[in-house]
Length: 65
Image 1 (tube, rainbow, N blue to C red):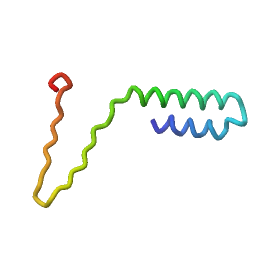
Image 2 (image 1 turned 180 degrees about the horizontal axis):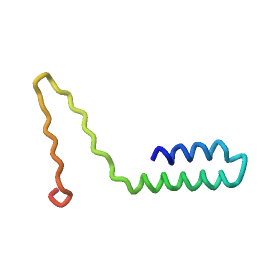
Image 3 (image 1 turned 180 degrees about the vertical axis):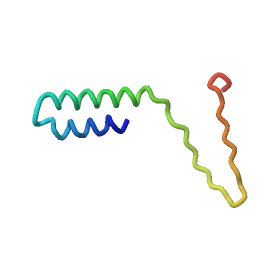
């Protein structure tokens, strides 16, 4: 994903120079948008722990939920 971000940024900076870089910029931006739509959202949790506390993390199969 970082490569697409770099490609989009580079093409955006150079787009005034040629039509090719404009097309590269549009294509890279479209690929990033599609990637965001297809990616599964990340699960995050913030927990305050005191000394001696522990967390148990379990991953369940999607069928068992």
